[in-house]
Amino acid sequence: MTYIMCVFMFGLIVGLVAVASNPSPYFAAFGLVVVSGMGCGILVGHGAPFLSLVLFLIYLGGMLVVFAYSAALAAEPLSETLGSRPVALSMLMYLGLIVTGVWFFWGGWFSNFWVTVDEIVEFSVFRGDMAGMALMYYTGGWMLVVGAWVLLLTLFVVLEVSRGLGRGALRVV
Image (tube, rainbow, N blue to C red):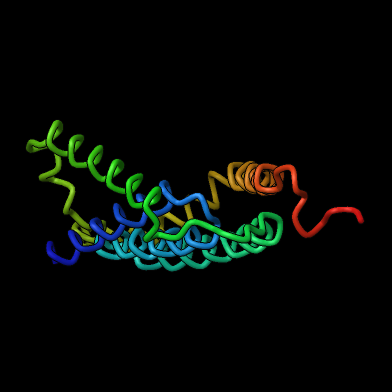
């Protein structure tokens, strides 16, 4: 199980580097799909399969909407790919920063994080992830409304930033 979790974490890091180093929305969206899949795999490994499924479906649905709008408004004739020289150099720089950070902070601080939420199953009636979701809706309903408004604002900000000066497909003739 430890090897599978390490593969998920490595895929998460590679996907985050691909998103951070790619200027094109087409290939950055592929990195976001990899990041969401690997992050949900990490959640499943820690014992939260229901939360993982809900987050994966909601995240990919919202990302699909943002990607469709930003791809329509930011139509580039010659976009940078993952194999081009500037993107590859940027990826190597980010991976170097990550390796430097891991080397700097290496120690025993991560040894107790491989505990799942179902370790105390003898004392609980519910699974940990389902009780957590119910508690999130019960006590944090107002935060879900605030989060929805923030996501709507983020959608408009992404659309405005990706529009640029050319106006894309929505320009007035």
